[in-house]
Image: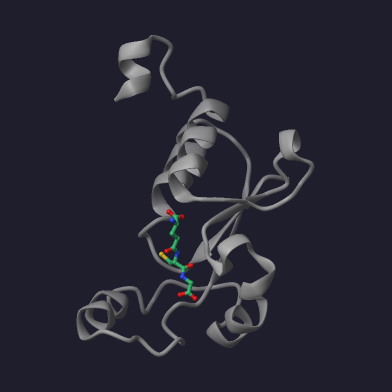
Length: 115
Ligand SMILES: N[C@@H](CCC(=O)N[C@@H](CS)C(=O)NCC(=O)O)C(=O)O
């Protein structure tokens, strides 16, 4: 099944989650705990603190172990994308466009696609 991997944050994960949900596309929502990582900027620490209650599938230590397996060592990635042989598919904006196509929410005319 299509799998979206991101942290237990909205940030770059929430738009593809919402699009897939709105379009009725089944997917696994897999999350790593971002809070367990030492925040390197006070403003980021402040933002991350808002998400303390959001449960994660894996802890931050696991992320540090796994990150080199992902393209650019970053999330989000989509996995089990039929068209690309299941290789992890990175880059949030490309993921959003792909999810919108799957969900049939991309729009059909050029003016909508550009926006
Ligand atoms: N250009 C990438 C940026 C992805 C990115 O910056 N991801 C951050 C979280 S928002 C990340 O995975 N950081 C890894 C880390 O800090 O270990 C995209 O748009 O998807």
